Image (tube, rainbow, N blue to C red; front, side, top):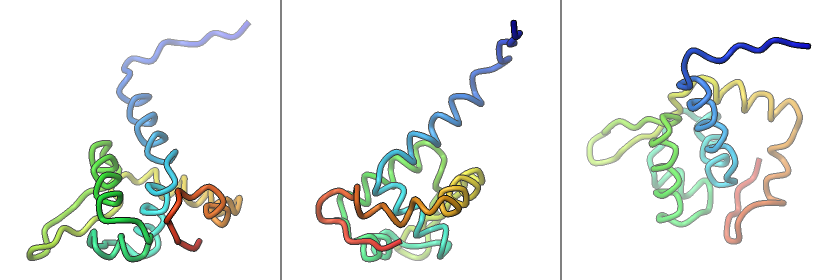
Length: 116
């Protein structure tokens, strides 16, 4: 019989669950992939690179920001987005290692045209 101890706080599991939730959507994963490869990007750049609509990119960036996975800073009149949750880099590295990002086009929502 194994003995498990109850966590002192649910903050860590909640935070991890939020990160995992962010990774379950193909467009959010695509946006993170773009930011991982190229650092900061404006919403317009993310839209162009992902091939998604402005509204779709804006909605998904809002979710990523809400979970603290992505941050933004003002650069003149533009917001520039970047990954702020360090664990995302490790998760994406693991995904790359298993070559699963190359299969994203198989599950991409209609109208998305990104390449891994």
